[in-house]
Amino acid sequence: SEYIGSQQLICIFVITGFVLCGIVEQSASVALRANSTSAYSAAEFAEYVENTSYITRYCLPLPEKNETTAHVARSIPHIEIPMTRTDETESVLREAFMWGTLISPLAASRIAARVGAERLFGAGVLGAGVSAVMVPAAWLTPYHVAIRIVQGIFMGATWPAAHMLAVTWFKPKNLSAFVSTYTAVNLGYAIVGLLGTMLVRSIGRDWLSYAITVVSCLWYFLWWRFVEETLNPNRPIRDEHRLLPWRRLLLSKPAWACGIAVVGSQWADATLMLG
Image (cartoon, rainbow, N blue to C red; front, side, top):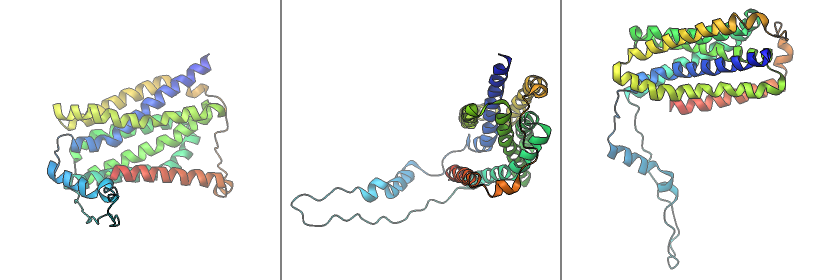
């Protein structure tokens, strides 16, 4: 019963940890856009939608039975609405964060194998959240971009740490259920979009960063108390892959297939967000 309780505790903390990571990832966009208004009027946007609509381009009415004229879809001129300065700024901040997440996973996987996934996951969530305290002083400067990269590096370290938690605490038949908790990052997007916008509009942009920092510190204290100090010394003895078989890994078709699938998924997700 104690072992099952340990698994449930880890799931709760991993879910809330990824929620915090999602909040950190989207916090810059929320702070940037919460008080902004659209640069285009309703009429301009309606014209844009009408002239680029799939329905307008391809679904024109068919000719009547007595008509002999062939149905031809009319050509629609290509219309571009340029990015606003806010759009460009948001894109840069998102891109910086994503570069950070690209840098850290491989090194983090080796660190997790040596110091313990429990310690690394906690440090990753804490680092991503606490870094937000510097955002108000660095707002929209090159230092802000640097902070976003650092936050991405910390968040990128949480994924391999979570994988290591999975193979350490869960049996193979339960791995898929545990990995599904990673989607909690999307819940973080929703929470910061709703509550973060209200916070920024009511008491100011900087307070979003301060709130993230405080919540992250509270989360880490609980993680340290109930996971690092309690569970880490008593974790099951499993193969932690301290010596990674690089040659077998690089020649493994399943490993490459998984890597390509993940990169493709993340590329599509990033493209949609940046767009």
